[in-house]
Length: 351
Image (cartoon, rainbow, N blue to C red; front, side):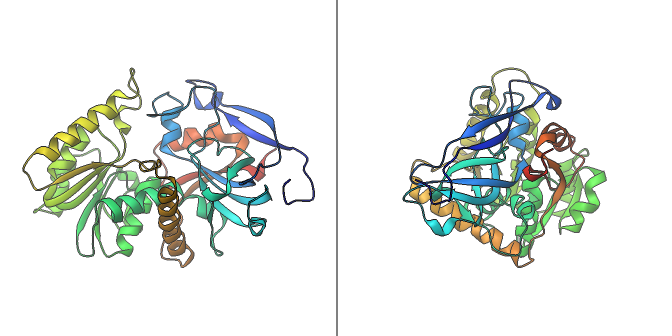
């Protein structure tokens, strides 16, 4: 029995991705959620976001997405409104964050209590939401993989995006010089968060070499394809390439896994060469088989990011807010590449 005054089912409003559709073809459905079982909690979602993963999923291009139909939503922030037996009753009323991969585009969700991460006071739900998957990804790539330190120089591709803008800010807090690629129209926004803007439509290697003639200490590349080759070539001796996507192939037909497998092979080959540079692929879910350690790292890393944000050292980059029912418009805006930061869905604004 849950630790609440009622055990009646909750009606959850969900956005469903029915297949390979255009953003306006997303569906809104309702389903009944039972009271949470032992070890689980019921969360009223206050904010969820549009990540690059959902842009790939609607095309059937995300590496390990579930079969259609399903509810997207990679992460969320919400309030615990019911807890099952064996769950800590102190969680009731707490604002928490969770990494979900799918399911977040919902008004309510049942989650494992052990997967929840407390959100510090001083952050709104929408602000905290911008740092969940983006913050974990940026922190782990910067500090756990590349291990960049103060005084070094890095390149961040897509510096105006959700992960990119978070990565730029984390690097600047750590005293790292950042060169950020973006469109010319987003150059001012990239500069405002502390990066030196470079136009991705131009000759990126030439522009970066002009700013860092001896090479850079790390490059963070979500583009894949030709970009990752150029990125590896920008590294100084001892430098690190961190690839974390294949955005350049999201509109290509064919097997969704092939571009990623090609990327894996290329990175592995570079690591065999005697060039004193390293190449890695970042996957936020790596290490999940060691569940306790995985959860501990998520809590530690996201906790560090949220604490920085609560102290005002990071600024939430909210591109736009939409009600959950307007998920299609939100997805289209995120895909337009015209915004800085993250597009956020706010379920409480349901019609």
